[in-house]
Image 1 (cartoon, rainbow, N blue to C red):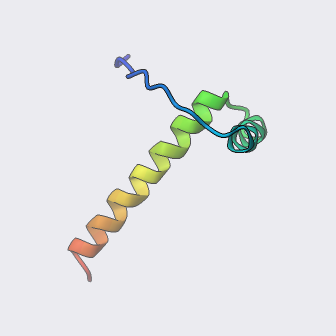
Image 2 (cartoon, rainbow, N blue to C red):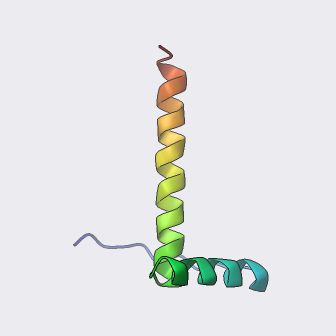
Length: 56
């Protein structure tokens, strides 16, 4: 398994609570939910850039 970079992250209590509730709904840990959300954002950004570079 690839090494994962540890990153300290500060969140407001409100944002943390929202992510924690979402994570519980998706049966993930808070850390897993944050990683999932960031991964999806990066995928969407990459896809958008590719679409802009190659409009059909």
